[in-house]
Amino acid sequence: MNVLVIGNGGREHALVWKIARSRRVKRVFCAPGNAGTAADGENVPIAADDIASLVQFAKQNQVQLTVVGPEAPLAAGIVDAFEREKLRIFGPTKAAAELESSKAFCKEVLRSASVPTAEHHVFRSAESAIRFLQEREDMPIVVKADGLAAGKGVFVCERRQEAIDAVRQIGQDKIFGPAGDRIVIEERLHGQEASVLAITDGRTLVTLPPAQDHKRAYDGDTGPNTGGMGAYSPTPLVDEKQLGWIEEHILVPTIHAMKRIRRPFRGVLYAGLMLTHQGPKVLEYNVRFGDPECQPILMRLQSDLLDVLEAAASGDLDRIEPLEWDPRPAVCVVMASEGYPGNYTKGHPIRGLAEAAQVPDVKVFHAGTTLKDGQVVTSGGRVLGVTALGSNIPLAKLQAYTAVKCIRWDGAWCRKDISDKAASL
Ligand code: AMP
Ligand code: GLY
Image 1 (cartoon, rainbow, N blue to C red):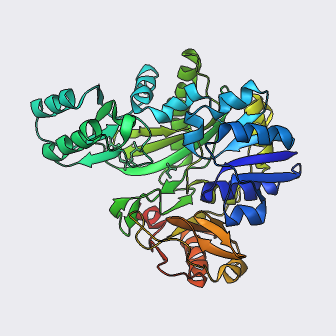
Image 2 (cartoon, rainbow, N blue to C red):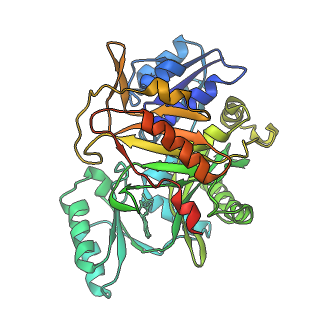
């Protein structure tokens, strides 16, 4: 069958690569894709948010399954548009995607399902949020824009004044536009963070092995927040027993709550968790694969991903055999452009990709890359996700950094400590 993957990041390259290995696949398209998806599949020059053109492309090219990578088209209703045309698509409807696109809605669902999460309040104006902050004691607190803000809408504040400034930026200066029409203020939680993702058809849930992202730019979790500088899976921070607990007390009740309010959830339910002393609590839900978590997770998957995604999209996930995984862990190191997550330049030729590809048990997933005159050049902030398997986490890490050393371009950099948190237990 023909499959269409939507998006152009490292997550989408991993999806294209894995789907292309399915025994049932004929052609894998990626819209708009990057230099990596062009090598493992076929790129289509349609933007991820051009829903009408994507529908048309799917119809004209006998696409039997579409898989959506990023959140923006989901929040814009791409699944509803495809389903109206009787086209099969993997992902949540617009109403269900609100779990990610509105933090206030997400909190309501969590509360109604009795899922552990931080205490919170929602405000419709900056003034009311500031009054609330002034009336309570000066203590650490978290301020969030309600809507999508490309991962930048969260301010973890030490002091009241910092929180008030964050409220002003979100609610008055509208730095995130209408995403700041509502403001969520939350108790600050402490602990290690982990990502637990599950594929679901709205009834059956297939939980994937836990992963850990590295959101801060620099070593030792310092510097500004990024889209994620690296990830590894499985993380020993969540053991089998705890994963079972998370499934039972977090994921399943959420799926049930969504069904109850007539927004049945299909797709990837991704719980961003804080592992607190009182147990795991939900920081946020995403409604898609994590980037870069998707890369190490799919690197380990031995089952046919297409079977699972198709079954989830068709509502018969209960017929799928348990997934098989490579017993070895995988580590993904993101190589970024100089200046990222701030301003950076593009168009730098990347050298050493062929050498890196020779390193055993390594796959270099592309993110911000494009082809220019037959040469792979940089085109984004996060450029590559160098992913390796190893017989334990330190060896997987070593293998990933061995491949990283082969790759060069002007200003390339990466964190040096991806997966070290696994050893801090
Ligand atoms: P979110 O987009 O809600 O996951 O927030 C982004 C990041 O902000 C998370 O990965 C955490 O590092 C941090 N964060 C969010 N909410 C809280 C909270 N209640 N307590 C502490 N840190 C938080
Ligand atoms: N890795 C974080 C995210 O995908 O949102």
